[in-house]
Image 1 (cartoon, one colour):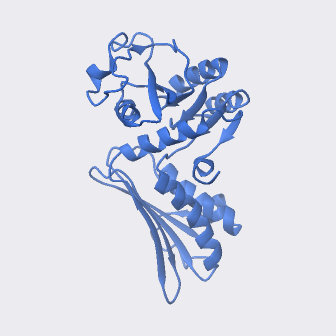
Image 2 (cartoon, rainbow, N blue to C red):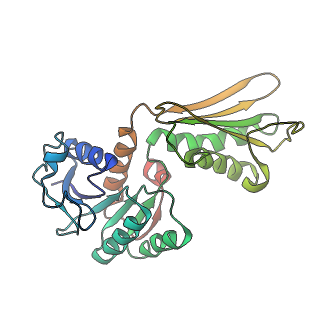
Image 3 (tube, one colour):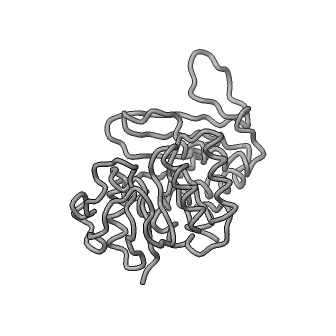
Length: 266
């Protein structure tokens, strides 16, 4: 038997991909597909909605967790996530959360759950991106102040926030490794006559066009050379695959807040 997985928001675009990839993973078992109370999908078999689900296709959408599971993956809404966090904490279920846009009170609810169960809450579950975040900080520290740093990110034209959470994570990693300050040293775009850049400045630039899934590059430039670290997501399945790997790793861990860095290097 594999790790038993529950997916919240299972009828959404990401939820369907999570179910499909979970079904194809020999180490995981799709055990529950959760949707909000009153959702028209409740009671229907998941294979009706996502034909790629073979193993576990008979699982039915439900508004509540009706069976024992090892981990729950939640890519839903802030309100939906908070409700599931409480349910998971009460039932001792590990939590992998990909929901963004949560306010301080909602984040506090996640932190409270981490006192009872293991939790990962990440803005990006791509394994490559999380490696890039770590390496960017190490490269910035190794190269030193002789290299200017710029971060560029590109996403589809329907993304509502900028810069992306991943670009900010790259910047934070660089700041943590080089004693920079996100509030003081991060410069968002340039226009007019901003003057010569400072040694500690990190430029941040967001591009929105077409159907770009997600491109991120950290640029390091000196008078003599340029170093670039890039990641390009080719399909949104990369995020689902990373979340499933995180769920398999997190199940059975002690309560607390974990990160994708722990999944990769812990």
